[in-house]
Structures are given as structure tokens and as C-alpha cells.
Amino acid sequence: MSCSLPTMRDVRGYEEKDPVTMRSVVSGYPRFVVHPFARQLVDHLVASTPALAGRTLWLTSSRRMAEALFAHLSQASGASLFASEGIHGVSHPESSDLFGRAKVFLQNIGGFISSREAEDQLVRRQLIPSAFGEEVFAGEATAEIRRVLQRALATAHAGDVLMANSGMNAIYAAFRASAEIQLPRQRTVWLQLGWLYLDTIAILKKFAATPADYVYVRDPHDRDGIERIFARHGAQIAGVFAEVPTNPLIETPDIPALAALCRQHGAHLILDPSVSSIFNLDLLPHADVVVMSLTKYTGSAGDVLAGAAVINPARPDAAELRERTAAWLEPVYARDLSRLAAQIRETESVLAQIHRNTARVAAFLETHPAVRDVFWALRPASRANYLKIARAPEATGGMITFTLRTPMEPFYNRLRLPKGPSFGMTTTLICPFMYLAHYNLVTTPAGLAELSASRLDPDLLRLCCGSEPAEEIIGALAEALG
Image 1 (spheres, rainbow, N blue to C red):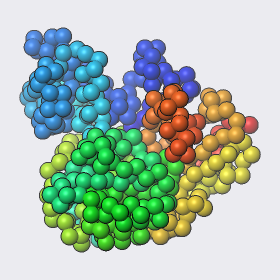
Image 2 (tube, rainbow, N blue to C red):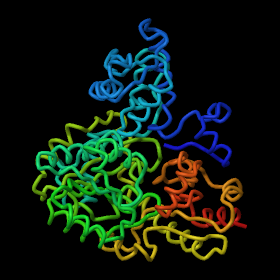
Image 3 (cartoon, helix red, strand yellow):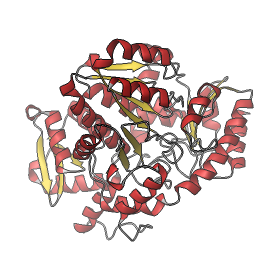
């Protein structure tokens, strides 16, 4: 789920696709870096299929996803569907424009072939001797995952827990399902509360009915402002999407008040607890749908991509949301399910250690003279809202973001911690988040102005504590801070 970017030069090289850097980036987060097994399978298929000569081939998670990508690129682009022995994809003429459009589409909604499926296809074609040995769950994996999630959710029935091949696909499916239900009611407006993860923003912008139907509420704490929007436009609002807390400023809206407002006006509320984990937050009673990345915390070894959408059965549109969301979801490959099921039972014990570390690391950063701002779940500005929905006062998740009073780059280069994208692993990870998620914004005057308007420092660092001894994490930070 991650890769090592040990210096800011490496970060820039990764973002700018510098050949020197990219030669070292063998793998990375699977929605951004195509896995080596998938690349090897593509190379084999292109070499052995004359019709693919001089074309780019994308392998997708299903035939339906291939058809969606084909429609997105349009037949006029020269794209064509591909199928071979149970795998599906789309090919198109070699073109940087088509390459970018296809990759971003699959990245946004979770459409790439699973690395384990690609691996099995390589074994089947005798291109590699065997699949990598790993611990997997011996029983019915989906049932085991649902059993553990139901325990965490407390009120969900097994049929309300819908599996997805990634958190982004769960978000996409729930959003599309809700939008379909609300459209005949003349409800098309979607509210985004606070700055969210980049692909979530992309989904809300791309798939809203019109550009005017996407409304960005910069401050998720602005309850009066949100109430004014509903008072004036409540009959047009399809729904509200909120991360709980937000990524990367870790701000928590007043969820009970927001839920009451949505119900009063007939809007759907979709909540994403991935930053903290559904194991830490009691969100389902407030939401129409809870969406999440199971890659985070539940897949704590950092080697499996999966997600879920959970329907609140008590909401009026529950049956239709369940049916429509399931129709948009991409299947999780069987070996990915088995790998996740082998890890998910450890989630609560992993989180317990992460919570102890997070509190100690946050306290260290808050009192260090070189640190300017520290953001985490129990920061004073959001503490009361977070505790309204937390299952326990210490259940914070592992994410801390912070800014420095001194230049960020020397600190980052000196720091002796694992550095790369993703979070929610047993391994502590830190990254210059805005550079990795929004490089186009940190490198242009207009982008910097946009970040400033949203109270985002381009040099913000995102740290997610793992389960190592807290002394080791703090010691590395102290050494680099000087």
C-alpha cells in the first residue's frame, strides 16, 4: 500500500515522473501505481496479441468496469474492449491524453485489476511458478469480514454490509446510488463538508448532475452556515458527504446535528470514518450510508485493498440504497478477501496500541517549540464533536498532521521514519501530504491561493502512528526537529 520516498527530491521526482525516481518506484499505492504483476500481465498480453500492437492496455476489475472505461474514453477515441480467459480491459492507441484520462478514471473509482488476480493469471499462464505465500483465512472470508464489522457497527445486519474492491469504489457506489434515488425528486445538490481526500472530491465534482450542484463548504464546523444553506435550498439538496474526521485537517463536524438537519430536509447523509476507523466511531445511527476503506487499520499489514458500504436499515430509502449501491460496487477478488479476513480480527488490538502511541506523539508535538500547529482527533476545535460519536475517549485513530515553524524540507530529509503514502498500518508512515495528493496546487500561484482559502499549509506533514514503541516514534521526530 505504500512506497519509500525518503527525501523531498524523491517526492518531487515521483510527482513529476522523473525517470530516475520512477526506476526505483517498483510498487506503490495500487490506485496510483500499477502493480508489477499487472504490468507483467499486460506486457505478456500485448506481446502475444497482434491486435494490441502499438496500443495501451488497461486491465480492469470486471467486465462492467471495462465497459465503463470504454464509455468514458468514447469509441471515437479508438478505444476497444478486451477480454481473455476471464480478464477484461480496454485498449487504446498510445496517447498521453488517453493514458491520463483512463488512469485517472480507474484511480478515482477503483477500477484496476487486483494484484492477486493478476498474479494468479501469471501462474495460470506459467509466467511465474507460484503465487506468493501468505497467511489467509481458511473459512468463508466474506462472512468473517462481515461478522467482525457487524460487531464494530453494533446495529448492522450482514446484508447491510456491502463489500467493495476499495474504499473509493464504496464511496463511488454509494454516491451514484444516492444520486439516482434523489434525481426524480428534483434533488441534485451535494454538499462537501471541509477539504476531503482528493479522489472523493473528484467523484463529487465529476458525477454531480451539473458543476453548480457541487457545493464546497470550507469549514465543517460552520453549523450556522450549513443551516442557512439548507434553509434556502433544502428542497434541492440530494445529500451531504463528510469525512469523520476530515483528511488532512482532522476536523469533525457536529454529526448528530448534521444528521437531524438532513432528515428534516430529506437529504441523504454519507459518512466516511476511514481516517479514524469505524471501530472507533458510532456513525451508522446518524448516516444513510457509511463508506470506508478497509485497507486502513483492518488491513493493517498494508498489503490488501478493500472497502465497504454499510446501509442504515432504519432509514426510509434503505432498501433502494442497498440494491442500487450493490449494483455499482466492484467485486473483491477472492484472495484479497481471504487476506483481509486473516487480518481483520486483529483490528481492535492493533488500534489499542496505535491509540496509546497517538496520544503520546500528539502531546510531544504540541509542546515542541519547532512545531507550529498540530491537528488530531482531540484537538480543542474538534474535540467535543469527536467525543459525541467516539466509542471511547481514547479511540482517536492514528492520524496526526502538523506544520513547522522552520522549513519543512530539511526536517523531512533528516527524519528517520518510514516515508510514503497511505495510513492505518502497523508501520508508522509520514508524508508531505499536499505534495503527494495535490502537487498541482503546491506548485502554482493559483493552487497555493486555493489551499490558503481552505486553511491548508502546502508544507503540512501527515503522520499516522503505527504500533511500534512510542519512544521510537518520538525519538525519531525529536532527532529531526533538533
